[in-house]
Length: 64
Ligand SMILES: [Zn+2]
Image (cartoon, rainbow, N blue to C red; front, side, top):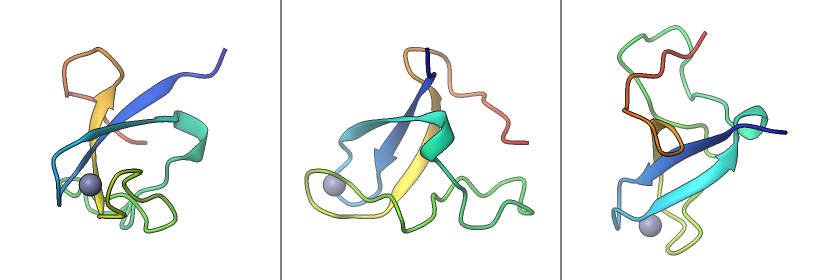
């Protein structure tokens, strides 16, 4: 079973869910940056996404 991650659109604020394997951060070296690579965009408006955390969990996921 693939884990789903919650990503929030920075444009319209809608939550999008993607399998963790599909998610890549724009700048993995920046610890504070949760901006998701532009390969994935908001399904509603095409806006840029920000990683929130595991689907249904508190937003304290650390990307490693
Ligand atoms: Zn959006």
